Image 1 (cartoon, one colour):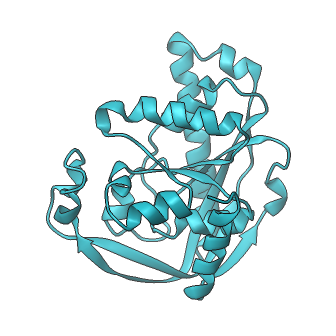
Image 2 (image 1 turned 90 degrees about the vertical axis):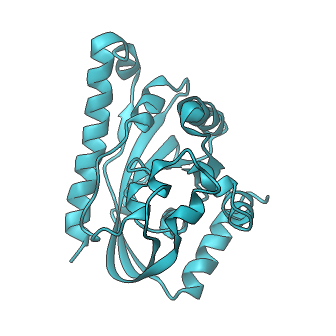
Length: 241
C-alpha cells in the first residue's frame, strides 16, 4: 500500500458523496511530533473525514469484525490502512503492540474511544458516549518521545441516515461482540456538511509517565481520559449549530 493511498481515497470518497468540511483551529495541529488522534464516532465516514481534515494518513484502530467481512476487509485495512483489534480477550494487548509500533515509526495513530456502541445505535450529532480508557493507557505507557494526544470533534451539521444491514448478520463474523447479538439494523450515517474542530494537544511528558504507577497511575489515566472527553464535548457543542 502506498503511504498516501489512504489520504487519496479519503478525499475521493468525500468528493463522491459531495461532503463539505469546515475546519476550525487547524493551527493547533502539531507539526513535528508523534500524534495520537482521539475523536468522537458516529459514521463509517469518520476516519476518511479526519484524514482529509488533517491532510495526512492516519492509522486507525478498528473493530475486529472489519477484518472478517469480505470486501470491507480489503477496503478498511488494505486501502484505508486501518489496523484491526483482536477479539475481546486479546484486544488490549493487540492495541498496545500495534499502536506502539506505528507511533515509533512516526505514523499518526487514530482512536475512537467510544467503541462500537455509537456505530450500532443511532445517536444525535451533538451527543457523545463515555470514553474507554485504552488510549490513555497507551499514551502513558508508550515508549516514544514527543507524543501528544490530539482531541478532535466531528460535528455534523447536515446528514442523511439510513439502515445498512441487520446487526445479527455481523454476529456471524464476530460472535464475541454482544452488540451484534440483538435485533435491529446497523445505521448508516452519511455526512453532507460537517465541522471538524481541533482541540488543544495534550502533551505526554516524562513526569506523566513517572506518575503512571499504582493508585497515582489510575488518577493519571482518569485525568487524560476526562480531559479529552471534555475537550471534544465542548468542541462538539460549538460545532453543532
